Every structure is written in C-alpha cells, then in structure tokens.
Image (cartoon, rainbow, N blue to C red; front, side, top):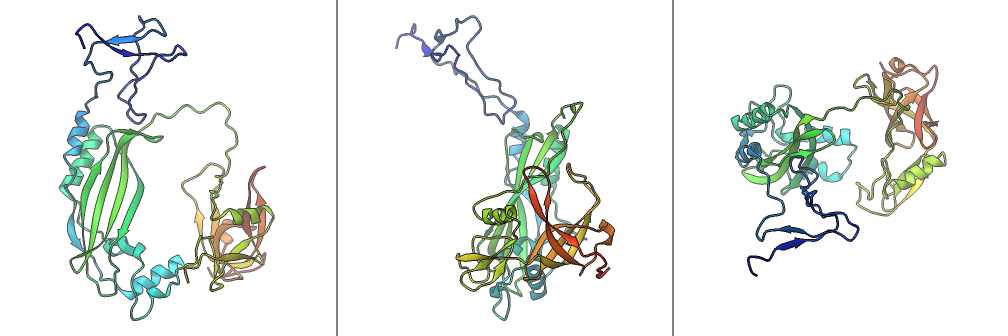
Length: 362
C-alpha cells in the first residue's frame, strides 16, 4: 500500500455515520463520529495506522488494581468447631429436614459455609490494612456509598461435627469504573477460603459496589400512586400463581415420598424426586412467627404493618401479611384464615385474616 492510500470508514446507506463507542458502563469515553465537515454519507478518511478510538487511561483504576491479590483480612480461626446444635438450629430455621444433617454420620448443610466463620456480636479483629486503604482511596475519590450486590459459594469438602475451621480473605478483583442505576463506582470482590484441618473445604466470594450516588431527578408535580412490587413468576412457580388467580392456594406434593412443600421448588428436598402434584390448602392456619415492619418505608406500603410466618393446617409454612387486626395485636399462635386481597387491576395476593377474639402468645 502506498503512503497516499488511506483507510476508509464508510457510513451506512441510511446516511448516518458509523459510531465507535466505549461500553455503556464507561462514562468517560464519548462516541467518536465523523467530523461535521464531512458530508453525510461520504467515506471518512483517516491516515493509515491512526486508531479510530484511543483507549482512555484511568489513573485511579490503575491504583485500585494494585490491591488485587492482597489480604482482605487476617487469617482467623472459627469461634466454634462445626457442631450439631448449630446445624440443628440452621435446619429448623430453614425448614430443611434432609436426613443427611442428622445422626452420627451427619454433615453440615453446605450453605452453612459462612456461618462457621462469623464472629458474632463481638466480631473478628480481622480487617486488613490493605482493604482499609482500598476503601479510603475510593472514599477520597468520591465513591463514598456502598451496597452489597451478590455472593458466590463453592463447596469442595463436606464439613462434619468436630471440624476446626480456619479462613482467610483476599481482595480478588476490582472492576473498572461501572455506571449503574445507583451511581458510578467500582465493584470489589473478596474471596474467603475456608479450610477444615488444613484442607480447602469451600470458597465464599462476596461482592460490593463502592459508588458515588447518581443525582436524583426532581420529582414530578404529580406522581401516580405507587404499585405493589410484581411477583417474579417463572416455570417453577407459575402453577402457584395460576392457583391464586383462581382463588386456590396450592401446595406441592412430592410424587416420590408424598412430602408437602412450600414454597414451590423444582425437586423434593426430602427424597430428591422431581415428580410432583398439588393439593389445595384448606385455608386454615395459625401465626407461627411474625415481625412488624416500621422502617424503611417503601412505596405502596403503609408502615407499620405485620408480616407473618403462617403455619397452614397441612403443616407447611408461608409468609404473608396478617390483616384484620391492628399490627400490635398480632400474636404467635393466633388462628388465621386465608383470603385473597385485590391489590390493583393486575394483582391479587393471598393474605391471612386474624380470627377476631382469638389470642395467642405475647
């Protein structure tokens, strides 16, 4: 190719110029388009070897990257070895009756992995200087807010009663600058390696976003009444919501061992069978536990209000609102009966009305 030859970046036939843009998550780079002096629809000529879009350096990100691989917390020992009482309490709270978690050959539920590393109210004096420096660096750059985004766990070895737990955290990665609905910032991922008798038993990755809050748009003069959040309906629970639409509260029944289960799941956590049918709940139940929601306020809800864990006559439990009595009159053991509440034109929900005159524990 002779020096007089040039690269050609042709515009589409529609007359719009080609645009080479940075990813939407990078607010620094702006689209690069044809100069205004070029007639629309004409080729854009640039000398051979000239990049169309030069990478934009981010000095802050270069500094943040230096923290990858450094310790996020000092190595520590679990305050208690793996033990049967904690396993029992966990299973009762989660409603998990898997026989593998009981008896002389019991193992701990894999999802308890992080529980053995927690320091309780007194905590662990385990935060490293590197993590504090990283956090301070982001604070100084204006990324002063933080929100947890997700966690991932990997299970490599069953944990059994008596296992002594050790663990250590590392700053695994810091993302380039990202723009989210909350604002612009950086995702920090830490990885905890959990060991039993020196053997790697599992990993726990925890990710947070350190961000500068986005400017809030001014509220319009008139705001439409907020709607209740829509339930997430998928192939695993669509049958439940079909039942609600027909004013029927349907409970899954395992086709292998006939165990009833709620909420709906793709398989039985008692025997593992994927076969199931449904039974219709009678609608009778009692308040097994409850909380009163005061804060934070949420659009479409009017705190304070009572949210109950209701034990149905069939033996399964579900969470819903307790209505028919003031929030401060709800009691454990209070009989309730199912009814369906029309929230708006598109949404109807199962709730439980307290039996008037019925009492329960304080």
